[in-house]
Length: 339
Ligand code: NCD
Image (cartoon, rainbow, N blue to C red):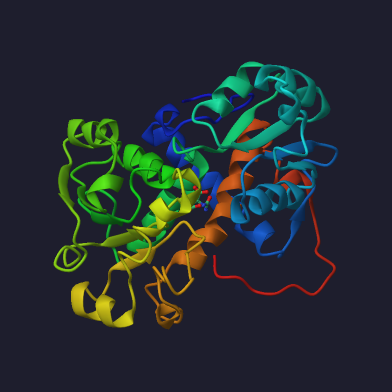
């Protein structure tokens, strides 16, 4: 991908290392605006259509706030029942109409490839905020950005790193997208830890192996974490199971807490999770007793989502060179964040 302006962002397969570098360098330039040290009104007058047909907190709100922080306004549609899709309208027709009302659209939908189908009817750039179990490209970008920053602090890099992915690797779209993005790098070791029934799909494993990476597949947490630089935990994607009973079989199978971490991980293993973590007692996949641990990167990871989504809006709308020109001061009290 060399051209961002006017382009859809639908899959991680669009990116090469140069385009990732471009996104990350624009994301870094967003830090003072996200920190409210100063403002930019570069998107004053622009409208984001934020269409979320599946539950979301971080992705939906960070898309909206990213657009607001660049000076634009957000028109939101939440839930299938509130839209004419529930009256049988096609994604194509919905896109044709809504894309006249806005300048860019972010969309999440429960069906794989639905966002691509929608984009075919859209006159404006469409950004995939998650299409069923398939992909979540903006999450993969913010995950990779986080990995680069977290390992970079310790003088380590992505080439040659070891990542352990844990949980529902079958339905978890974040691990599908992140794994494929890591295929652009060299000599990455993957340890894929899941119940056998929830293993990483073969087509993703084939991509990882074709990139020359090493893959270990197991259903045991203990004994398989000691090499990991990054420990990436995921939630059982209960909404993709035929029934709650089926999902319950896997809930709580893998749990990380401070004692397991101390016993089984290196002292500098970075803990990541796309969130939400399932904190109900039956699951408790990532215990609160790690909340103050310096290697717990989950909230820094979510914070980085704001920078990445601001960068994607600036690039797809072609204003990345004009941020500074439209700057103005912040007049209110503002708190510090951890970027
Ligand atoms: C993830 C998603 O929706 O795929 N959440 C997110 O966007 N940060 C992961 C999940 O829901 O488990």
